[in-house]
Image (cartoon, one colour):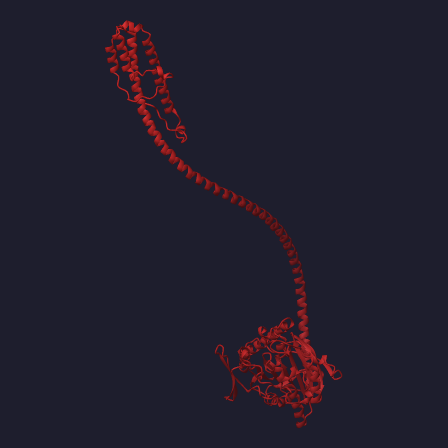
Length: 624
């Protein structure tokens, strides 16, 4: 019986329950906490086309969502009514050989564990059997009551495990209350999601025995405290009831799924944050499976999480599936509530094949099926051996190819090493060049700064020189005017020199020719042009004895007349010593003065332009 249940083949009669089946949705709202002031805007509308309708409205953004479900329960609905409407109708189908599954889905602190097990997070005295008792103990109690009323014999096996952080943990193995009645078996997945986990199985003969074991094993569940829920389930707990009658064998799966959480609201840190991530990931995988079933996709991702692997047989259609969505009544959780209802709405649209009855086979049929299966396995083994030989040959070829590839890899590694060394050397050279360029750049910046300063100084000097050039030009204009004046004066001096020479020649003639009369001398002197009225100071070294030939001409004439009045003749005049004493120095001084003045004029004319342009030198003034 053990081998048959675990590893044997269960035959199903597809003709006995033909047709289609849909997932039934039930909705339950948790009571409003006494300290809550803002309540969710929701309403439980009556029946609509044979279904109950739930309407939820988000007052913040004005969105709303309607869900048609089998039944809807508010916060005042007792546990007894929920069991009688949701799970109690499944007990006859379970005894007839149909698999049944119940999932409690919803956000954290929405009352899932309270609905499935009872208050205090499932840590509850189930033997009280009061009104707070959850669905799981009530199902077992109703099952044994039904067996007693129908006078039926059935073996009931019980397994209880949890999925914590994607790891299956056996809760019965941790308890000590059922060591003598516990057996271990391998829990296998279906063809859609193959996996094997060894969990415990306990045979129970009464409801009280089951409740005693359930109370002891519930204490081993992973629970924690968050800002949203003081007693929060941190794992998905699954209860499996296997009922074996004389003709059928069916399984009742009841899963209390951990609630989805918003980390921002729950403020989960450390391990709680890691648990929240795994919970949300597994619930998202469940939503993806429902979505794939709703879209009728060829590939359904059962293997994405341990939860979907465990529930693959129930979700694929070989079980009556009921989903009890639990929602809170707090207004601040309206987005999570609408997300839960959207999942339920999509699940309600999934249409699957109707489940079939799981029947036992007779020993003869089982033997014949086993023989054919053994033959099939032998053929498969022969094919696998042939394939293994081919794989071995391929393996040898791959080994040779691998050796070649390893040699190529070594060569590539050597080449890579050389390239790396070359790159390092180039990088060092490049770095040195960069350093040199940076140094040169700094020097160029310094030179540029110096050039800018020099340019500024040059500009200032240019401005200064421009001003000086203007001054020099102005001074040159003055010098040109002086040169013109000097030229005019030079012409006058030359004319005066010619006159002086004529006078000297006349004096010499008078001195050499004593017979020249005063009248002739006067005529010779009068033929010379007159000089300016105001002569300059004589340049003779002894001006007291100097007589200018033009200015002292009248004096000389008077002196000559006085000598003649005194009876002096020309010969006497010639022999007189006073005349030579007056005439020879006069002539010599006149010549020396004229020569000196001519030399000064030549020096002025031949002086360099830069010497004449110096502002410190006074302008040249030449006496007429």
